[in-house]
Image 1 (spheres, rainbow, N blue to C red):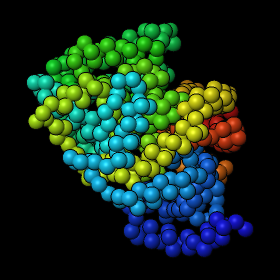
Image 2: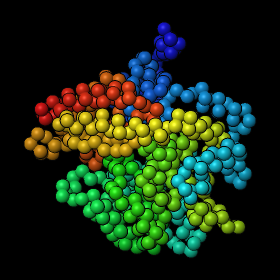
Image 3: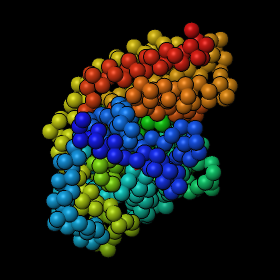
Image 4: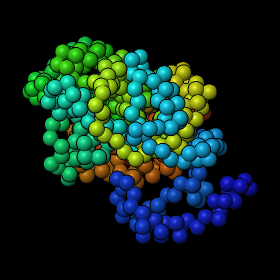
Length: 468
Ligand SMILES: Cc1ncc(COP(=O)(O)O)c(C=O)c1O
């Protein structure tokens, strides 16, 4: 018996569950589901796998929350980096003065970021990076003598849950109960092509999207729009890759109307799409990048906003400052862990590994298209979505009750869990989407395990849906 098994045997799972039930308020969670299904308590991670308190082992095909880019096996290295920093200096802020790890990490990020993005402002999370980006954009225009405050995002996009970031979200289901939100946020079409007229060319689709964006800018009054924010590949809605010419077109509209372009790379940075930054791969040329998750592979609480010299220099004037800050942004221990994470990614050559393996992952996932329940497979790097059908054998849309039955836990997630696979299905705007984003260390054996499990579960689901 390994040490792990011995340790797990000593965990009192029922007591942990009782205590969680009494005190722990989980995020975005229906707290009553534990009455039907016992709460899973994860206790250990190894490579791409998670192990629960009862010793069950799961392939984590979502990198937890799209974040454990290097997986779970580097605790020793990251822990040593944290310990060394705790011994030196356990905390110092970035207000006024600073500390070596913030300097080193800012330097490293400037080196890795796309050309011209050289100035780094640290935050404690992705949402706070987005929040800070919107404030940078507003203050940037203010310092240049313009009153611009509005933000344009895309429908179905997720940007975080703080009130500013939430206002930019294009997901009605998580906004409506908090309205009124911040004024000035509006949304344009995202790049989902499924469902567009069959005869439409990619070029026509791109033009259609750019026209939609330009109309929105004009409707808002361009002189009031501070920023356009978009992920290089949009997660929510199901890994929406930009069509050819889209990113350049958005950049051109930003230039024409004096609007800052923000690439929200909270998920896509640090290798997810086969490059350090997906905005580089998709030639977005943003003025600002927001990041978090992969920066430390989520092993430390840290995010960052990276800006161009043009943006930064507006603030770099005697008597001026960016009027924003927080206690934890660029915390020395978090920065030390992020630096060690990046070193590990460099040692493993992660972006190159993802780029080299993405065709294999794609073609294995594409093989699932043979199943009648699979409507679409799309994405890039290690960032894929499988859209499942929302229509029955006669092409009629399933009722909401039927959608909930088919894509609820019992027929889908629980079966995947029984196969030892952790994945998430979201009903994005009513369209069922399975999100696939394994840790970036995953390789052929993990791809096979994932696709074999998916094939079995989705075959059974095709039967349940009356499609075969
Ligand atoms: C694109 C994007 N932006 C922002 C966020 C918010 O990040 P956080 O949960 O760290 O606040 C997320 C989280 O998933 C995200 O995917």
